[in-house]
Length: 92
Image 1: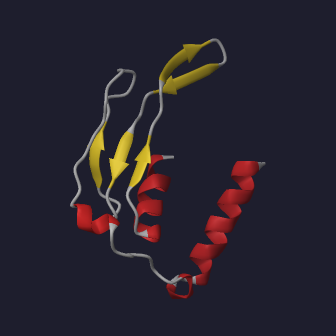
Image 2: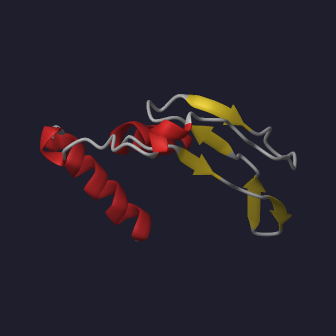
């Protein structure tokens, strides 16, 4: 799952923040794997699994004021197919 967030950050050219709570229940487990990736998919902050913590990172304000998107027509068709298939499998 964490590779997906890094890929989204790179693909969409955006900062991605994943927030997850530490939770242990009979049929559920939340590792608390909170992370922040920059627009190149580089992990810039990470929480320690199974430890409640605050994850933060600082970015230059300018990156949020400019457009960094890439045109979907520049993506390999196979990648678009993989993304569509992953979305179908995720939603069941």
